[in-house]
Length: 109
Length: 122
Image (cartoon, rainbow over all chains, first blue to last red; front, side):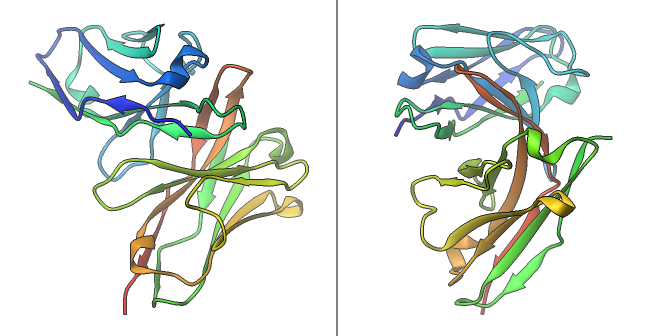
């Protein structure tokens, strides 16, 4: 199995740029996907693959990866971006298992 | 539009069973794998496993073998999660999620059901 580690909480001033990271051995082989979850709502996919945004996701969201760390960057954070963010990827077992990070609570100040 | 609609909240006693449904619409059901994700109150997302909607073959994550069963009824484009011998620690929101983007390097869940709250309490 594998683990993905995220910082529990991050804050950003309105309009500034914030990076949320996700670390794990599996990220050396697989890309992370990123999900936004607001209270009482289902998660929403915001980034997948190398740096792909599903239709309807603002272009202020971007993804990157280096070594064992994947990052989600929000450039010009908006109040509506305040949410929990989760990464996931395949684990390193090769058996098509998936693992989620513990989540990061983003506060927009 | 493409959507997954799950069955409503459930209140069960310990030892009972529950079956959660996830009805797909707006796309060809058998073209995408279906995943199940658990979220305990105040906790993060936990991947439970997935089911191949072509073959019906399920794959369960560690910790979700034995009491958890994924199944399909492709005639009504519906996936099911059944949990038996319920325990208090099974209290959670259960989501189905379509694996809309998949390659050798990633699996991304692009469509999620609204979630089904299962409460286990005596």
